[in-house]
Length: 471
Image 1 (cartoon, helix red, strand yellow):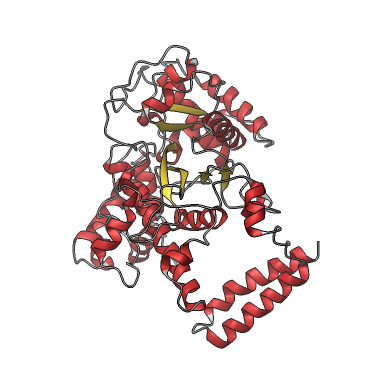
Image 2 (tube, rainbow, N blue to C red):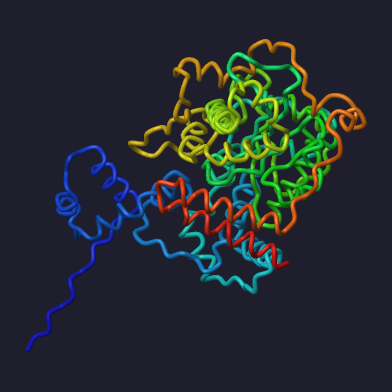
């Protein structure tokens, strides 16, 4: 009896898979019809749809081999990515990169990352195939924007002929410093109620750096007994950004991950970094002084401010419901810098990665192209009750208005004066207080919650409180 031969598998290349996704997005064809057109099975089309985000990320990176039909993930993906970053930078420097150089660098990166790995010729061949790397003629990629002449005194790393094309979207970061009137309410804002916020994210939107918040006072009373390392954001006792220490920490973090990243900065910021020590993993790409493009897209900054203002109004509305007759301005007077730090951290987490990625691409600040048929995520959260869309939009942008007079008790005067006004520091909560508070919160949810899913989030919090109480 003659054995039937196995049906030959027809695998699609990355380029063909992107065509499949475009067909499904832009036409009314079913998966079965698309499968017949490409002469593959319907389950294969279904798997392509399931892996849509990963395929689009590979396509937009510009480094993937678009004709490759199967992508076998490396066991040492961290070394893979770090070596690819180093390779792009070496090509930007017009180095003649050879196979032995790559093998030596791969071993060096493995040792830095603490991995027991010895690269072989076979591994290098597969790495080149995975990342579409070839040893052609040397070339230097021109910057996407005309660079400003580097100021005298800058270290050599700021003068390298790097461009955005030398980095994958995950390794291109932009940052912005912005003033924030942290407890302003519609129709009532004070000049003293201001903090400075530093936001930083990569162009893919998959990595947001910890927020830095700067205020006028060295040690606000609200920080008494607080462990700074446990906070979701950092506080700096000045409205100016401490660029030297912030960049040094950023460089250390990237070094621990074995990465080489680019950081977009305004030209005026780079000019002020004449005393900057050597950065080994963060490469500064200054925007031209004449450029109107911000290093972090303005739509991303506005989305952060919109989420901050919405969350703040929600918090104030809850305070008003507990205190009859309290006006919005009176409720806002109790908001501290520590409250603002938490609200800002929550607002930053709410800015969607899709918005960040599309904004970077549209501003020309990220390599690659926007995914096909992509829709820009809305930068505005739902409008709070009692405000029209126009009123809320104006409220989001109120930093551009002229602030009125105001007194900010937490950020004016000496600590002795504050002590006379407010008395002794509030005692720190004990373990018994924490357990009672959790019990009270659970009871309140039992009597007022409308969704059992809320308890799933509560149980995580309850478990963490109980764990900390046992330490």
